[in-house]
Amino acid sequence: MIDEVRRYLDKADHALIVAEDLMGQGHAPDAASKIYYAMFYATKALLVSEGIDVVKHSAVESAFGYQFAKPGRIDARYHKMLMNARKIREIADYDIDEEIVEPVASLKIEEGRHFWRRSSGFSV
Image 1 (cartoon, rainbow, N blue to C red):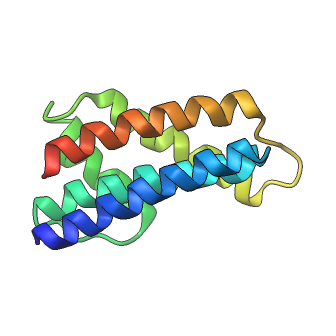
Image 2 (cartoon, rainbow, N blue to C red):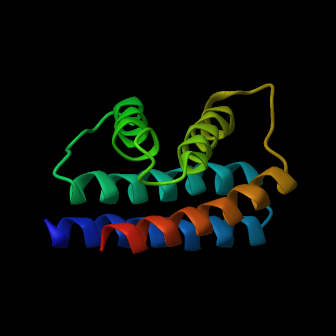
Image 3 (cartoon, rainbow, N blue to C red):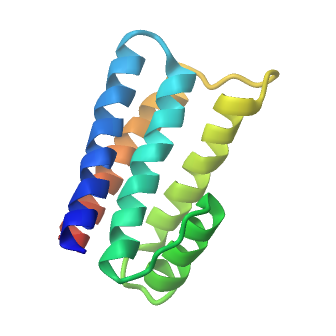
């Protein structure tokens, strides 16, 4: 199980690096999408560390809230960050009328870094 947790954290770390690269190239929507995946993989690491195996994005979000945020094991703001990042990712990936702009993506990258640091310290 520890190996699986480490692999999810490595994927989260890689997604952060890619998000930063995309921002540097002026691709804010793609960066915002990738930052969500960094948070998603970090959340998967936390859940796997507890023996919880969920796949769907909504199930990961829900299990994270139920297992970590609701009982106060992790600050509820991280659950809100994950939910907000997912909404922004959906806009970036699917909405043709609304665009994610650089300041929003930059903020998400900062949140993603903080989220990753918090989850990696909690699960390993």
